[in-house]
Image (cartoon, rainbow, N blue to C red; front, side, top):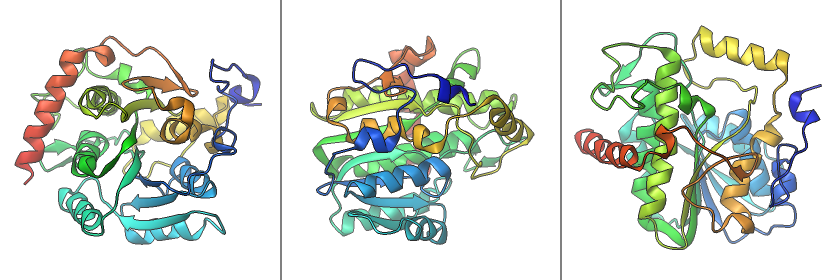
Length: 308
């Protein structure tokens, strides 16, 4: 029996580690909402897509290729809502900008964005556009996408960014903003941790910049056994195998917190927080460093400007 089948602790909102995305959204009518979801073709992305469309939402579902996104949407079956497949390669700024341009040209207005896609722990350093791949995809790509749609958010829109307890595994100084290609040193898990810390800090600072009724939060999905959708090294494979032995959270539970944050009425006033099991939890010292969050934002703006 998995650890998550044994624990049923809930927070004040009535949800906890035993909650699933379907349970959390039970009774919600999302038929007037449009969401943007990245990483729709992997397990938790698929479950998030399924549940939001089940509740009537229109979900712009992105994957690296249009074929992958289309396959994810085709597998939904009948639902009140719909999945709209679109391509977005978060390692390629031109692909992100093409998606943003298309959404803007067709007048898309978003009720929420779920930044779900991830690249995890390649065994060898991979550099694209002068950036280590995990930092590029997990943080910079999502930053570019979200920033491009900020003025197309509803007055009460919610931005949800997937982080991880791995944000505690980053470099001792937290972020190495002067070495984002990892030229000095490459550790698969430290670089992954840096990207997850960047996710957390991005959401934390974005919350300060949004309109009063808009929210931004980061989250931990839980120890979910997933397929690594991008280059994953031996370390990532071992982590997946270990989760299968020790017990890992099924995708319905893994999608719970992001569905809660993007759709549930009781999450409407939660902002700038880091959540797990649908409830706020503490971060690392670096994760609560507002000065570091500002420095990251400014450095990312410089990177985005350089990328053209």
